[in-house]
Image (cartoon, rainbow, N blue to C red; front, top):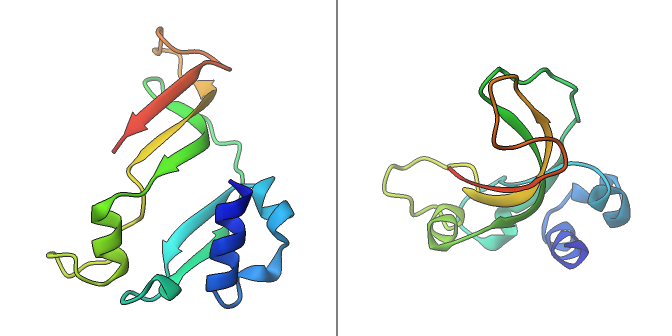
Length: 115
């Protein structure tokens, strides 16, 4: 949501290269710039590519994503693997493109994913 983007933009130095309104209208990634504090969370723009999807894949326009306790542990630098992992494993959105072998989903259909 725009409120989350605004909060993250205020926490992350250098993330205000684009306005919050511009970021809300284009793909962005929330990532851990520096583990140890919520102030280490930042935003970066993601280029929209028109890549072809493989026959058994779909491309999703993400409308919502979930952050959970695993993400908090990751942000705080306490992941038991010692790695900083990508944030958010769950998402909901709309199918942008579907591969030729995908029969149960098509462009414009709502969908969700769990990583």
